Image 1: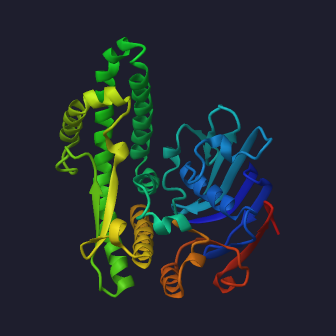
Image 2: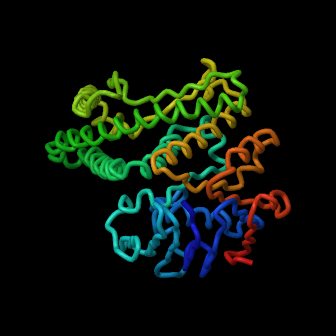
Image 3: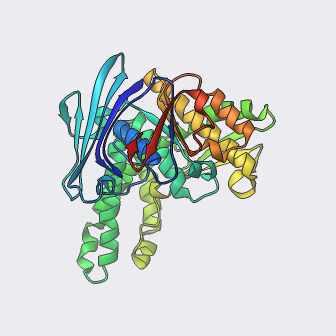
Length: 366
């Protein structure tokens, strides 16, 4: 799959821009804070309907503008297609278009332009908090499985409502009457999330182990372990069994949740651990081991998505090469001999032999 053209209007610091790309490597160069990462964000958003930076859609609309637009021409699924998002600065919901037809959800564009993003923060994702690792997994799963995207949105909605009940019940005790209903629904949707995640992380770990084996010359054994609610003994169990496991766990935490006014347990606290030959990276891994494992995870994501769609997803490398030593740079570059790749860089002459160079300055293509 190839992104042939991208058009931006009032997106981040871009007032108006139209770009065309090569099917291979596209190098985006420019000084810091000129709009290189904004460009990758636009490409990623066009394919998934999710931003890897913004919490709200309005944040992506250029300051002072009422709306922004991201649109592109794509060769995917053996034909040319168009994608278009219209984003509003207020509370008005965004508009999604595929091939000129308006769509209700981002799930209806799944598979047209899947992307894999790799940024400097990802190099240390195995050392940071669980939230960043959940976000990384969710971004991939939402592209792979539209039903997961819908379930995650629903889970977060119910979680917010339950949180409000817990916070308000001190002043309005009657609100606790509806809490069991929210708990039941939260567990039903949460069970779906666990089921999807268990299978995804199993496949991701196996694929990443192959890449890490190549990277390390077979000197280290890579292992990924998915961690969810402690009452779930088998995350591969049926959804009905997982629902019951979550309900049992919530019942044991009922009093504690009332006292703290917080949702203390559930898949919103899920995580995963990576170990190398039995050594937990989060606790004991060196910086080099952590970066190597993170690269293996990203390459595994790309492989899984390519296997799912039958085409390699677009790879977005946001200034990540400058963070790597020469050996790790070479390993990453050797993995991108096929498919479309976008690389941002602050040093114009460093990787110019890789492919087409596009220079960005103050939100303008030079």
